[in-house]
Length: 98
Image 1 (tube, rainbow, N blue to C red):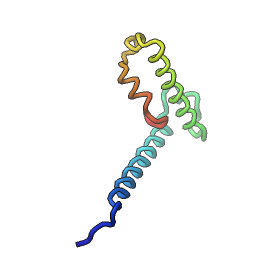
Image 2: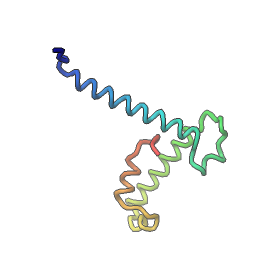
Image 3: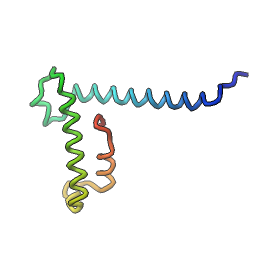
Image 4: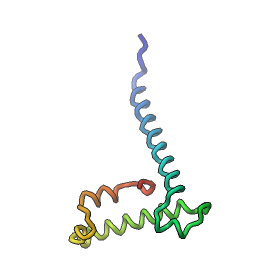
């Protein structure tokens, strides 16, 4: 019976996780290129090579502002219909995640 060398399973698991993450990233990029946020879609040309960078920069800025508001004015979270847990979940996302 064939036995895997020691540590081989961990390498396989790590590679699978890496490939899954790359696939998620690839799909997120395609989605952002084809369907940017509505408030950015009008100001960016369809074939603008910097379009995705603008989308990602906007996402980072909005998340930073959300975190700042949650830290400085937590009572306002109720006004926008968010909880601290939802803010934490949103602000912990990578820039390319919707």
